[in-house]
Image (cartoon, rainbow, N blue to C red; front, top):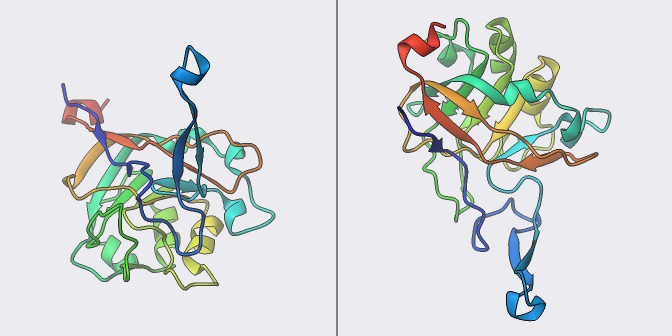
Length: 214
């Protein structure tokens, strides 16, 4: 039986974070020696730290918050697509891939997975992928880069395009060690009331042909 593969960035005190955003920090509030029974830790972080889900409220003040999203979109069959030959991933690139019957798409780009360094440059996800993915029935797009838009973008055109085409966003997954193919995906966000996003523990498991055809 195939094992689950962790595709999430580990949360560490030296991990990279979005420039200007709150870095991740974990520490002990009380030690077992102090309490006499348990260690108690605390953490602080941006909700967009490491592998995370964006809620529409992140880029639209009238959009749904993380606790309002449909959890079904984050669990189930997903296809990992290798687009590492392209600096820009647009609809023409995705048209070369068989997405028939696929509702969750994970893009493996050319950016090396390095949780401890925020990238100086990263591939571009063109806004026109949204309409094409919706046409194919896709409801979740995952990417192995910090954002579906460039770091300096203020318009967030791809975020809004995906939102307008009812496609949810999973960012900063790690796919360097993953081959293209069909997998079972679990990437549940936390139920943080009123929040604009959530870190997730994302895992995948290869699906055999007979499992895919059930």
